[in-house]
Length: 245
Ligand code: SF4
Ligand code: SF4
Ligand code: SF4
Image (cartoon, rainbow, N blue to C red; front, side, top):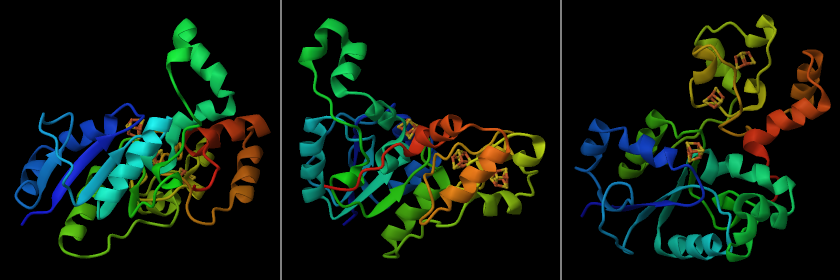
């Protein structure tokens, strides 16, 4: 019997599901090993019978809360893919404002027809077995985790900073080039993708466990950022500061 896998989307741009579809050859290979029973962007069939639930998107409505709880009850394993479902991601930027104001700005006179709550990661509502943050989800990491689960192994998610991978990639540090970067406190696993391609780390994989935010803040200040700049830099992907229900 192949394990049954269901993909679900919540509040997001759905870029992570598109990224999974972009795997093409790898998805076809995976289909030999598992059965996809739910994937809105891929198929019209639906099933409530699945072993593994893969979640894209943040929780941002009362209906989302009820739906993710139902999914959690049905799934033996629940994996979040991408920054939105794993961290709350950019959706949490709205949390700095009153929800009535957010609804009014987005929906105008129709605001009364909609519900919204402060956006949060899936782990704030139900237990998550494996969180794969990144914007969008990292193809290699996703495939490694799925393969490990199929082999009955526990997937390893890195808990060291992007700087370690950046050094391995022999990149010049952007601080030495007069720019700033969140690599010292951001969870590795992307092979310092953005620095390697000429940019800096925005923090889309979230913070490592026990990040030295004070030291990172001091370094950012030394490189010209104001306190407000620093707060805004961290807020892009890690604005969610609440715990779990
Ligand atoms: S993590 Fe990024 S790519 Fe994925 S759904 Fe969220 S915003 Fe889109
Ligand atoms: S560029 Fe960023 S990730 Fe790379 S070493 Fe410097 S601070 Fe770390
Ligand atoms: S370098 Fe930073 S922003 Fe870029 S993919 Fe890696 S964690 Fe995300």
